[in-house]
Every structure is written in C-alpha cells, then in structure tokens.
Amino acid sequence: MNLPNALTIARILALPFCAWALFKNGGNDPDWQIIAWCMFFVVGMTDVLDGRIARKRNQISSFGTLVDPIADKAFIATALVGLSILERMPWWVTIVILAREVGITILRLAVIKRGIIAASKGGKIKSLLQNFSVGFYMLPLPEYLFVPRDILLGLAIVLTMTSGYEYVRDVIKAGRGK
Image 1 (cartoon, rainbow, N blue to C red):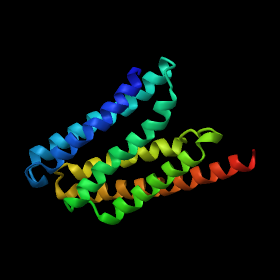
Image 2: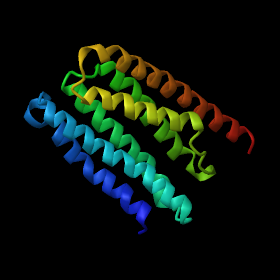
Image 3: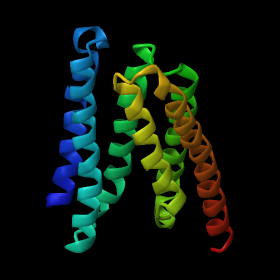
C-alpha cells in the first residue's frame, strides 16, 4: 500500500458521505448544496493528487492503474445519479455519460492483458469538464448562470463521446498492430 493507492481508496470510501451531503434536507438546502459541492471538490482533488504523487515518487502500481479509473467512474456516477434523482440533472445526460464510462471501463478490462492504453489528453480534458459542469449543477446558482452551465455540460458531453470514440479507435489500432 502506498500513498497514491490510499488516496484512491479514500476517494471511494468518501463517496457515500458526498452523496449524503447532496441529499441532506431533501437536496434543496443551499447551505448543504455548497457543502456537498465542497466535499465533491475535495474528493475530486485527491484524484489529481494521487496521480501526481504516483508519477513523482515512481509509485505507479497495477492496483492503482486498475482501481483509479474505477474510482473516477464511481465519483462521477455518484454525482450524476444523485443529481438526477434530485431532478437537477436530466436522466438522459446521466445515462449517456455513464454508458460511455462503463463501456470504456469494460473495454479497458477486456484488453488489459495487451497493456493499458493511457488516457489521452482529450480524455483528461473530458474528465475535467465533466467534473466542473456537473459541479455547477450541485450549486445553488442564480438563474442567469443556467445557460453557461448548460453549455459547459454540452461541451462535456461532446468530449465524453469524442474521447470514447478515440479510445475505441486506439484499442482497435493497437490490436491490429500486434
């Protein structure tokens, strides 16, 4: 067990508390919306931190390589499903994003013996946009910010689908090359 892996496990273990904060007082209490956002933000930052620590200390492990992406998917799934249950996020958005994330995770597991194809720059930007755009749905924003929030989510959805296509394409190319 190393620090990056401990942070990944902590991220997974913190998600029920994040969901609890999101639903506190029926999910309509502005103070708890901000608290939930802060909790998700801190948990999300552990993903950045564990990756940097793993690379800097050369502590990249098979466990971390496998579990970190799963923790990322659990993180975004907790937020999306919670927001959809609270009717603050359309269910179709949750379904589209999670279908892509689950599909790519299954694909990664299927080809893991051939080696892992690293996340692309587009995939990393996709994750960043997903997290920020979904985060804005947690916050008690004034109505005039709804359109920019929705545009950001639209960009996240486009990048989600584009990076998913690119990952599948790269797996197919890698399979042909061997």
